[in-house]
Length: 335
Ligand code: NAD
Ligand code: LMR
Image 1: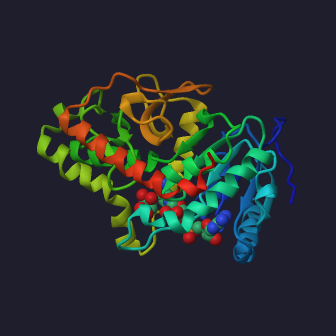
Image 2: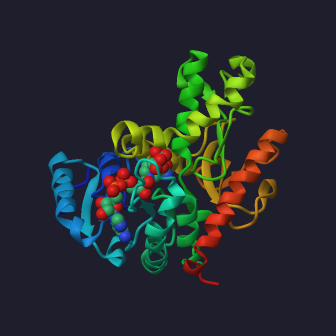
């Protein structure tokens, strides 16, 4: 299904896996309308799902066609990973089972871990030389580690797992508590795993340029209810919707890619799970949530952030959880 593009730029190929699912449905229309890569970049949307989901995926492709998006140069709907990742510059790995009420995201490792080795290998074999990958399917940190380990020729700095939804949730909670617009909340870092052990660090966040603890004036709330609300927000959404977050997850995917590609605002950072190079004592190689600064071409983990004893304890707990997840998937990681 080829459409005429109004722009002269060559289209960028973007893959969304699990495109027939909830998050996929929230995401593909935004990508096709230019919200991911901007108003001057045509897109070829390559959508991967499993064989039984192909009829639904064809329906998504039909709806995309019906939108007549000027930037959508073409769509591909397939169950073949080699086709899906052919020539892609961004791979958004969403396709995986979501958790149900009462589960933790780590409980999905057995069901989902096996998806990411083959996809890592297909990306390595087929993607464009500038490929970057964002893993969303849970447990996203460890799934990303599995895919990355299966694609050792792709530089490690191209691999990201999504902690931006947690950052957005945390910023929204702080804005509401302070009674300010959410845009005034900056420097909100999510450390560690996208799980209930994550550490949303409000101590180093800023509100209207001032330290968040000074503005909020309630340390007990910041160290207690605030943290647990953010840690458990995914479960609260599932309890309310009987489905896991989708619209907010898709929004966080767009935000993540825009921060990496377009750069972070001066003085601010964004939250991404990236391969540790030993920063803050985190074991090398873990896909760990850090505050990251990007200039659009390169990115780095923000160094020199100070943590008190309580924060260090939280970092230890989330690190141990990620190490445990890693040990559970040893057989999916080539040596
Ligand atoms: P969903 O069940 O609605 O959709 C998942 C889709 O993935 C389905 O269409 C399914 O057929 C497809 N799929 C399964 N195996 C696949 C494979 N091997 N290749 C390609 N596609 C495959 O689920 P959802 O609500 O869209 O959530 C998708 C994943 O994203 C879940 O694991 C969920 O937990 C996760 N998630 C993560 C975040 C985050 O912040 N990191 C946020 C929201 C959801
Ligand atoms: C979320 O944070 O909403 C997602 O990771 C889905 C989940 O299982 O919580």
